[in-house]
Length: 310
Image (cartoon, rainbow, N blue to C red):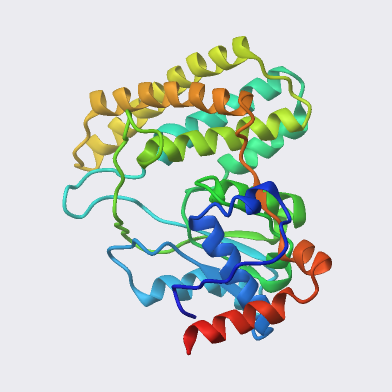
């Protein structure tokens, strides 16, 4: 499949698609549509393209739980140890310093507020060893029903859709590699359009929107409380990471990590401001929805790819 796909659908199914927001989510969505249109696949695997230490065994391990006919899994999430081979440092700051303490903070708040279903949902996200890993596989039937986030909320929104559409007993996790290195992003504290800044804002918007759309009322006072509690939890997590690094002979700049957590506190506030301004994260609709509303879509998509490849 050509990477310069120029397909433009004639149907506008969401305001997100009307704006044709480019990015990772849109690329994933179009690729899935092409796979479904060809009708040759039972299991689909996806993984990030910035893996420095890539090995074909990674793909084999990722797809085996869902492709093995002796298993009963419909979805598999990959995880791995993110330790830089060059710098001997822990990586994966967004997961370690933001997603883990932030979802823990939200889960505790839901428990204290009597929101049991929302607490279970957030504990589900906490159960993944590396929720922001871009590596997962799933059966074709399940993939057709997934809504795709167009921004950096892609991974967490996918996990959320899986939570709604299949049994927890049909979800697997697998360790993909002994070591894993990839290209790293800067915090970009002054520019909200790139780096970890945009990633954290997008992910925070997803979780805040989810609890709000499921009956939990948010306001400025609760957001400030979330920011303060998140900071305390983040520093607690950072202390644990410092102990792990010391035990395993890794470099660890604790002060730098705490400063990063402080930036993430501000990014939570930015996410709330965007939600209030009506700039909430939207998903591109599932291919089941698109095909139902526009039955010719698969034929036109295949024709567009074939024309692009000529």
